[in-house]
Image (cartoon, rainbow over all chains, first blue to last red):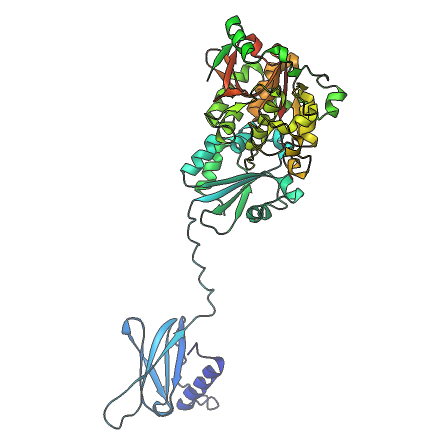
Length: 228
Length: 257
C-alpha cells in the first residue's frame, strides 16, 4: 500500500466531514480536525471488508494513534514519512484473533530523493596504456618523453601492482593495424588531443583517459588518485 | 663487457684483429649531411629538430638521468632482443653493415614498445646481390625503409635468396624516420639522439666497421657503449678520441603496418 492517493484523501475528508457537524451557513464556529494535523505528517489509511480492530505500529513497534471510521471498517492514521505495519483484527467467533498485516510506506514526494551513494573508491591498480603521436614525439618535453621511454618507471609501476600494457602510436589507429585487445583503449581517446594516458582497472572495468602527465611524479600522483 | 681505449695502439690492434679493415665491409658515405641527396634518402638533419639538441654543459647530467630512468637504448635492448649473454655474430661474413643496422632497427622497435620479432640481418643480402661483400650504410637504410627486414634467426648466415623472399612479410619490419648527424658536431648529435631515446647506426672509417651505438657513460672518462657483432655476449666499450663515430644515423621510428 503506498501513500494515500488523492481520491482517498478526498474520500477520507468526506468521511471525516460527514462525522463532524458543520454549520457554515449559520455562522456558528465549529471545531474540526484536519489531517495531517501538522507539517511533516502524512496520511495513511486502510479499509477492510467488515469492521474490526486496528493497530498501526511504526519503527521499533511504536504504536501510532489511529482514527477508526465506518464502524471499524476503515482505519486512518497520520505519521511522519516511514514504514508502518497496519494490523487488522477481523471479528472472531472462536476467541482467536488472527490479524491481517500489511506494510505501508508513507513517503514525502515533495522532498527530492536522497542522492545516490558515492561510488566505491577505485581498486587502485590499473592496466596502463599510453597513446602518443610518434611524429610529434620531438615536440614533447624531455620529462614527458622520459615517461614514455623509461624502463625504470615501467618496472616501478609493475612493482606497485599496475600492468604496463603498451605505448601505442596513433598512426597505428590510422593504419588500421590495431590489435583487438587495444581497441577499447584507443576508442577511449578518439578525438582527444594526444598524448593520452588510458587506464582500466586491473581486473577490467570502465576505461578512463587523461592527458599524459608531464613527468613521472605527476603520473604516480594521478594513479594514486585519478580525477573523476 | 670489454673496454678498448682507441688512443692505445695495443687496444686498437685488438679491434683490428677482430675485424680487419682490409675487409672493406663498410664504404664511407656518398652523400653529405643536409644536402638534398641525403634528404631524398630520408636522412633528416638532426639540426632541424632543435628541441632535441643538448648543449655540451648538459651532456653529463642528461646522460646520468637517462641511466637512472633507463631511457637509454641499451636498457631496452637488454630487455628485449639482446639480453646480456646473447651472442650476436656475423661470423666472418662481410655483413657488419646489416648486422648493426638490423640490431638498430630491433632496438628502435623495442623502444616503440612493439612486440619483439627476431629479424635476420642476412636477409638484406639482396642489396649486394647475395655476395659476401661490404656496403654503404645509406644503402642499408634505403633497403630497410623501402623493403624491410625479413624475420628469422638473427645469427643465420644463409645467403640463399629463396629463404628471404621480397614479399609483404618483410614490409612489416621497415624503418621509417632517420635523423642524420654532422661529422663536425658528432659528439653533440650522438648525445642528443641517445638522450632523446634512440640508438644510432654508426661506422668508423679507420676500422671499416659498422656497429650500433646504444649508450654513453661517464666514468671519469666518456665511454661509448656499443652493440657489436663479433660474438660478444654483451656490449663493448670504446674510449678515446677515435671512439667518436665518423658516420651515424639515429633510427627514430619504424612503420605501422
